[in-house]
Image 1 (cartoon, rainbow over the protein chains, first blue to last red):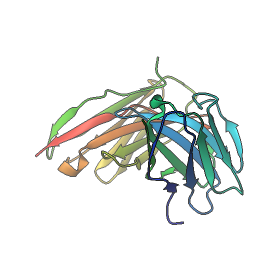
Image 2: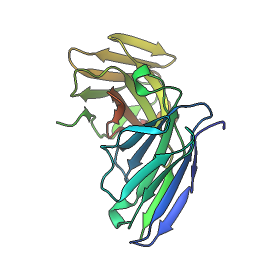
Image 3: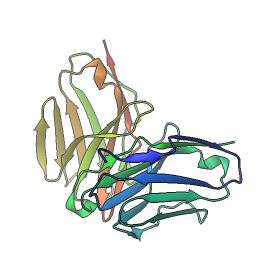
Image 4: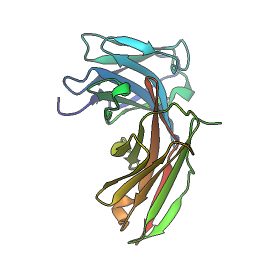
Length: 116
Length: 109
């Protein structure tokens, strides 16, 4: 696609429910990143994929968070048993190569999650 | 010490003046440095990237890197009201790109 596409753009869910966020990176981009940004805060690194593998999962806040990527393209971030502190915008980004190349990462418009 | 530190601001600059945004980082092995601009409610967009010591200019923007001091800055010349936004400094460390919390810039008409 022309840009990084994320869905849903907005999600309101009840505490305790599971949510799934989707990211479709720019066509041909092998590297994919998930960040979280709480209101008025900076970007918190969650996880990075190179192809279908995730070399670094250390940013995931808890075992309620998981992510996968299939076919080297679409990625899903799943949050189980959501809590109010999970409310944030979840940003996905992609680049044509991994970060070691210094390549620019391009962001999607984000998925705004509100847990009530 | 936070990995990437920025003054949160707000930094108020008169229209037409030079805005100077600063960032320090803690990990000496960091290799790549980026400045992103984020408008309220929008996702970040890349302004500049810099990889070696010195200055890099692109239009009204100049990025400056000093690896010995672990310091990177962004200068915006002839500031415009449309430059009002939050500016995020980002640093590549291993396979992560770490962001600072950003500096809010307000250009006064």
